[in-house]
Image (cartoon, rainbow, N blue to C red):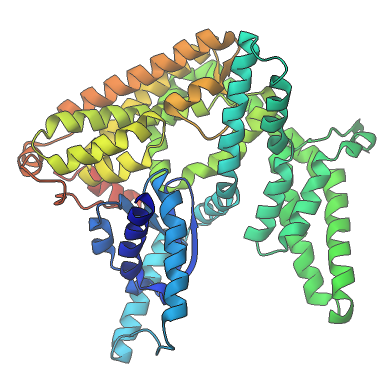
Length: 504
């Protein structure tokens, strides 16, 4: 029955994105179905947003449909199957319909180019998107290994099952010990090189034998430079490979290109990148500690308050290399628990919306279905299904996140550091992964206090300041679950976000 429901969701989406022949690629992350499209103009945006199971859409290099955690992993294979079935069953067709005249075609092309330029023109945004594309495929393993690490830590602290904990430690640590290889593989793939060559060069960083090599007057350490070194090594490998493809004769390309790529990139990695990336990694750890030790409350307020917009734009994945570097440097990342406060503000906001809109069954049902994921730190269902479409509540949710972040940052400044030993989980799910400098109990109390403050401030700010009188009048009508009065809108620019926030 569940399979039929997921297939029905996929079947309702497919025609609205232009049908099987318009879909060029299908992947998914934690909450989004990411589609490559041949012709963007064939997508029916408003009809997609109106589907009960669609929480919003994000247009990026891929067209992203927000379905929520759990659901997207079940809908995606059904969607892929429908695409394949549709392609197999469809006879040869003429090209997709185009505007009738050259003038219309030119106008449409200019409009699409302008929209794309506005969204993707900045080098910084393009760089962050590439970083995200490298790490998004790693998130399931990061989450799984992180949860196992948390369970293992609890068992060790309780002195339970001592014969099992070494096995759990191996399961949890195996992926993290080789994460540089996976980063190198994905980096080469993202930058247009041969993925396995990127992985091969990055593998040098974690090879135990580098301990016998001296660079810059000191012995190298296995893992020195971490994911940052792997990124640099793989990017270098891509450029060396492309140079070889350009100049090496085709007759000997299969022998010369991979050899030169691995040799040149490997030598530069060993005698340059590992040392430089190691120094940068150390600097990141030092900077993060200094920031929280000296400006903890303010830093927490800024980080907690700005994280929801990053999640909304999908740019939060760019922080994964920093988290990973901090874990490699000091055993836990002090930034993740602060950023998790944004989710607490979102939860408090959603509860306030639930209370204020007593007669709007559609929005209340959305909140009831999305709140469990929100408590576990997955904020996108509430962002796209509740706060962002309403406008003002998105801002008040950020206020709640800022308050929770300031609380955790204040305690860090007072000497009680709160960190996470793994990347991925947030909200309540982060408790098993907490670590700090004063034991799990103290760390959990500070983190729990931050969540509570985020809930309360997010609720109060939304309840009293999240709605204008006109909004309450318009939205508090008796609307059933099948008639959503709110069409999720996903601003992609600061201007559109500001407009949504001030809508009344």
